[in-house]
Image (cartoon, rainbow, N blue to C red; front, side, top):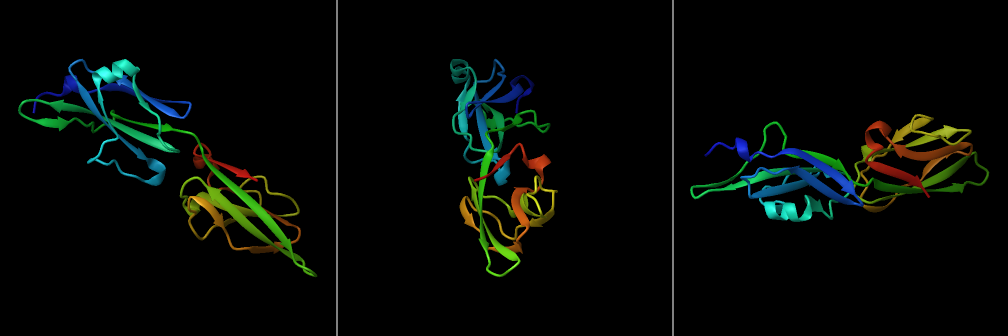
Length: 206
């Protein structure tokens, strides 16, 4: 295998423009083609080495002013760009142990919407609350929590008693079993870790 120093790409960047991802990098003059791999980190995907997302030539890169991914998906996306080398003796891809040929980008936030329905019980100091959660993608139960507070509506995930959900959420509607709370208690759903997840998920009460 020949020296690959001159074939390694540098300056890999990713930018989101109107739900499309634009990849740019310094294309080595001697390099004719790259393989691009893509995975969604939120879905814990691995790169599919048998099926690259795109094969891109230098002429295509020049024509379009970079690499354009029109359907990147939602959440945290990672790309790996590998120079493709073809000689009379061999064909191979060049990867980077330092990760210089990888880049991550956050596309639009994943929307989580929820509805709360209350059902009062006659001659009782308690009421039933049913939560319905709509997710755009499958969601681990650890991502969300519900908060119960006496006397007023909780304003964040620490403003009251926090409870974890017992089941994961599937993409689409998730109708949860009713819970019983006191008449003067209020319930809201929040991200369990607002620092880590606020850039990934957007949660809205309907």
